[in-house]
Each structure stands twice: as C-alpha cells, then as structure tokens.
Amino acid sequence: MARNIVVRNIPRASPEVIAGLREAGVATVHEAAGRIGLLGTRIVPRMPGSAVAGSAVTVSSHPGDNLMIHAAVEVCQPGDILVVTTTADSEHGMFGDLLATSLQARGVVGMVTDAGVRDIATLRQMDFPIWSRAVHSQGTVKATAGSVNVPVVAAGQLVSPGDVIIADDDGVVAIPVSLAAQVLDAATKRIANEEAKRAQFEAGALGLDVYGLRPLLDQLGVVYVDDIESA
Image (cartoon, rainbow, N blue to C red):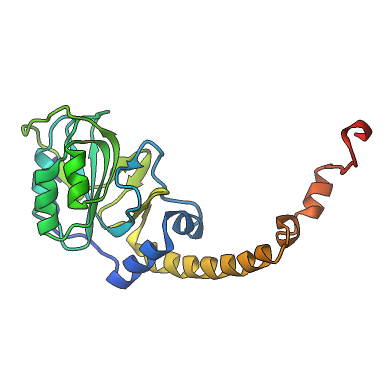
C-alpha cells in the first residue's frame, strides 16, 4: 500500500445512532462503552456549550503543514467530523475560518485536532465547533504529503476512519463504528438507571446505601467514631 494515501470511502454509523450518542454525551458514552475511547485532556473545547457527534474523517499531517486538511475536505460528507493529527508534536495554527467555511459547505459538523487552530474569534462567529490542543497564530505551509482516512493517534487515543466521535464540554470520545449501536443501547440503559438514582438522592437517600457501600467500608477497616478524641 502507498505510504501517503487518501481513502475516499469509510464506514459510517447510522444517523440515528450518531444522534443518540450525541444526546447521551461524552461522559455517559465513555462509561457505557466500558471506559474506552476517551481522548486526552490536552484537547479542549474552544466553543463552550457545543455538543456534536459524527463520523471521523481522519487526517495525518506533517507538522506545520495543512495540505492534507485541504485534501480531506473533498472526501467529507454531511455529518462528518474532521480529526486532524500531526506526525510529530505541533501546536501550529493549522486550521482557520477559510477551511471552516469549506467544511461547513460540505455539511461537516465540527473538528477535533491534536494541533492548533487560529482565527478563533471568527470561528466562534461562524458557530463551527472546535476541540483543539492549542490556539496559535503560527502559520503553516502546503508542501508535504500525508494521508487521509487512515488510523491516527489523537491525544493518546487511536481513532480509526468512521469511528463515531462525540464531543462536548466534557471532552472527546471515539467509539468504533462496529460498537456504536451497542454502546448507544448501553448508554440509554445507563441514563435510565441514573434517573432512578437521582430520584432516590432527591428524596434524601445516601450514596452509601444506594450503592451498597457500607459493607465495603467495613471490609476496608473504616471505623466510625463520635469525635476525633475517641479515634
């Protein structure tokens, strides 16, 4: 296989599954999936309050070079999320309002990058959600080959083309497309379970009792005393 490639076609979850995972949110999806897929904390939301989900179109770029982002735009479809990484550590501002305009025209709903973005004020005015490692005005060139729609690593997490990306104020999680429907089912059950527990807490119940933690405290040797002097 060629070293530098652009893959045109990727697997995608159904729009209904993607919408359900977006509604569930990053924290719930991560737990429902068995605590897999979470990108590291160095990628942060740049438009607080945004919540998106979509199929990952992945980009592997040379540091300080956004050529392959331009190549990726052509293969994006409505509802996709662009996931941009670099082959070495970089905080260059590889993405700005012009690329965002191009992506919006193709129906792309957001971008996640382990590098930097620029023109952040304009991006906010455009309402184009971004999760990035940095905001940095350092410019880029268009000179070095990379790849589109190959597996990449973003903030320590493997992301494959077509993975369902869920991104909100709690971070970013990537769910393999083959697991997406199963994870949505688990997330739906988890939300129902949490609603039942919320009702118990609102009625005054304690987590020690709701979760059955008192025997564990006893097993761990935790002793209750009336005051510190009697400890």
